Amino acid sequence: MATTRTDAPRRLRALALATILLALPVSAPLQTAIAAGVEELNAIVAVVNDDVIVNSELQREVATIIPELRARGTPIPPDKVLNKQVLERVISKRLQAQRAKQLGIKVDDATLTTTMTSIASRNKITLEELRATLESGGTRFEDFREDTRSQMIDAQLQRQEVLNTITVTEPEIDRFLEKESGRLVERTEVRLQHILIAFPDGASADQIQKAQAKAAGLVRQLRGGADFAKLAIANSDGQQALDGGDLGWFKIAEAPTLVAESARTLGKGEVSDALRSQGGFHIVKVTDIKGTESEAVTQTHARHILVRTNEVLSDDDAKTRLAQLRLRIVGGDDFATLARSHSDDTGSALKGGDLGWVNPGDTVPDFEQAMTALAPNEISAPFKTSFGWHIVQVLERRQADTTAEVLRQKAKDAIRQRKAREATELWLRRLRDEAYVEIRLDTEAD
Image (cartoon, rainbow, N blue to C red; front, side):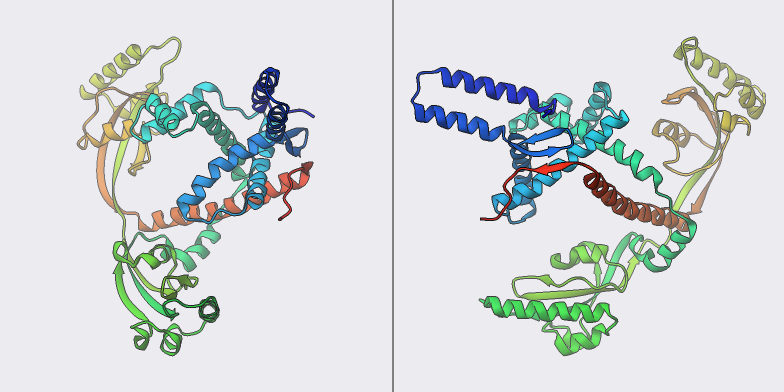
């Protein structure tokens, strides 16, 4: 059976260590124990097409999952349950790696180093400081590096196989905005209604179960269209029961901790699941939302001339050429005519270099910074971006209310993300169904 390239060196080192240890003058029981330990680490726990997963690989993955579960406050399941769940994750990763290899998807060392440097930069440290931080926490830098490479390959694979096939239509956006536009508004305040189904201090398991069942039943009624205020008056143990459970308006940052997530994420009119606290089960409804109703941005009408560098044209040459063009424009030559003749941006050159109305974030940061620094009709000195060398002229500026446009884009992004999650899940299941997978791990509960 073929083994993975990543695990082969580790297996060889383990076998070499076993050979050395077994050659020492130790007792027979100790020799047996050492050999058994090496054999267990290298036992095959799954076959995935023409590849294998060994126990040492599974246990490394388990060791990374346990701290994540603890950090989230999630109870750690029994070993066999945890091993089974983690093994499925490892199998999914292996299937994606195999598919990426078939399609020739790779991440070279230079690209990986750039990404690693970016990760360090986002954490305001150097790459060497990232290495030191990881290794001081018990994580080998090379393991982190290869895991990052694997994630980048998976992202490219999913983009190619799934995400690039997703489309969002205008009618879908219209329907989303009709029902769920409240989710997209930048919330400042929410109005909440509340039902509490309490249980006493030191409640028995039976009392807690009955309270939970009652709360779950109320949630079903509310989601079926029942009137929240009537159910609150009839059932709630909260102080606002006689007010129909109305808690009034809360600033988002001041919403009670227990319901903070619901306050941020529920749509207008939606009801939460039953949320448990020390004193009972809580049901929350978001009855109204206040937020940013308009989004005014400063738009800039600009035009530019781009000169790209190449094997023949150096940075100095491009900068000098643009400086000369700028002098001609300042001296009275027509910007649009020179842009048509000299700009390497073919799209805007046909329009005399005109970029139209530009929103913040529409251009790369270096270009936006240079453009923002100009007064209307002013022409910049030559400057460089990732596209080449530019001069830019600001023609005019205006304040524009882009709320509708921004909401439609947010709706489109939300629909795409929803479709992406569903499509990716289906694609991963199909990968699994079409593969040969043999589980050799003992997953039966004791």
